[in-house]
Image (cartoon, rainbow, N blue to C red; front, side):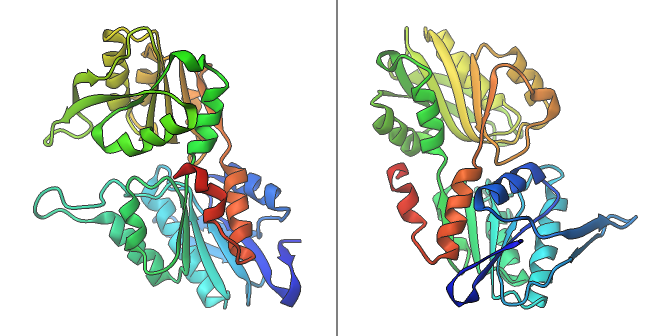
Length: 325
């Protein structure tokens, strides 16, 4: 069966794009359903064709696609899938984006810049999405860009509980890699009963991914420091922050992030870093060259499956994650 039938013949159907099939399969397994058989391929010029091989009429459709590289291709595929479901008379379409593409462009820093995160929300709405379900947006304000319900899930409980079992809590310090992550780091401190430190940095506005670390605010000498961030892309920011912590006497550094984007030089930077462990969730597939002993990937599928079930049954998604706020 591809659908769960309940009273009134409500039917859940789970659809997946081609970006991260392993995550979609695990979510389906946790829900006790099969992914809907889908025919998808690229034409010679790169255009994408999608057709679902079962009727979606009247169903509660959930379309999962993580925006990994090549990111524009997978976003387009998901938009096409949403359009196909709208035209196939799906009753409700929930877009599941474990990693929301273009979330870093959430405001104008300078003139003549786009707000691409808002454009993404508009594209989903225009395609036919009724609801968005996502994990750890770059900033909370993005929820307001979509004209409809947004279920914002948090990986903090999953990541923090894992770290809490690995380290001596008495020596633990939670570190925010910049001022923008302090609120999230505070939640980690509350959950693990640890003090907070901050790495103060300045980003060069004219050079992409170029960061200069200035100083560490807080006592990290002899401490096990856990750097917490929402995503790691090229690894420059987080590795520089780790270097600053070691320079200030940290005994060990563990890095955690929900989204392991891991582009370009990330593989070499993580391999060569003194950081003892990098902990990610599987919102994005981990590149093969990064299957290192010091990289740990935790499954986000149980959390996504629980949220899908609550949406389908008209329950409360918020209640699942109250302890993460």
